[in-house]
Amino acid sequence: MNTTSTPTKVASTDVSIKPNVVNTAAITKVTLVIFALLALLPFQDAVYDLFMMKVFCFAIFAASVNLLLGFSGLLSFGHAAFFGTSAYVTAHAMKEWGVTPEIGLLVGVVASTALGYVFGALAIRRQGIYFAMITLALAQVVYFIATQVPFTNGEDGIQGVPRGKFLGLFDLSNSSHMYWFALGVFILAFLLIQRVVQSPFGQVLKSIRENEPRAISLGYDVDRYKLMAFTISAGLAGLGGGLKSLVLQLASLTDVFWHTSGEAVLMTILGGIGTLWGPVLGAAIIINLQNYLANLGGWSTIATGAIFVLCVLAFRRGIVGEISHRLNIRL
Image (tube, rainbow, N blue to C red; front, side, top):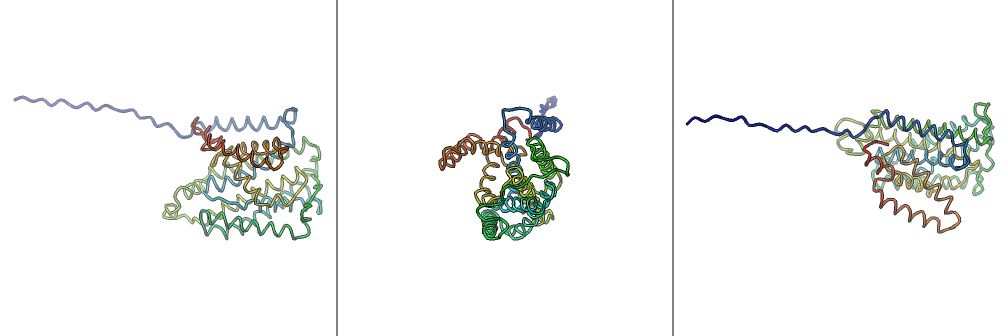
């Protein structure tokens, strides 16, 4: 019996793996276009400059929380301590020492960064809800100190903070000059966060967030990376707080109150945890809601909470997170 073996034809399957992140250059161009549009806002009358400057301040603040929560997996309820400390120090330096705004901001950022290092050294020894509670408790200590020390002026705060002249040349009492200064600070903070996230350091933070025991087994000093991330985040929160004291010319107890930390977490979740533009959009939405719902008095908080719940139900990943997921791009 003559049997001929027929070669079996194996169907070749052409599996094309779709990249998770599309053209980085295109995304960079989109970012540059957004920055350019923001730079042109003073030449129109639809959006107030002061509103956008306030958004920049809280966008930096929310982005600092997102750097810790979205890329390191650490939830902090104590970031108002860094935000408010820098606001007070910057306001005091501007009003009492008569320094230029860039020096005032630098002094505030240094103070908040140093405080963040101390907080981080104490808090990173715990994880999860225990970490969050430690940061909240330490922030309440700072709030109590702010009510007692003389230079904060108690409930009155530091009012009438002079904006000064940037580099001794550009008078920031001019609204347009102040807007571009605030925009410049926001852009620098955004690019710094982008650089941190995309660097090898940022990749290690993501690995710690996803699987901390595996990161330890690979030889990474997890506590040191967490402390560095916490300190950088505290410095960025201080940058937002110092800028806020220049924009609104005020530093008050509200800046160090725990409710301010909650607002930053709210902005991050609403915009999208682990995204770059999420905290920015979240800050814009929350600040806008606060302005429009201010006439409701105590009901404004309830209305904001209800809108937040609806947005979370509709956009599980946050607004920017959902857009990023559906378009398969990283925003």
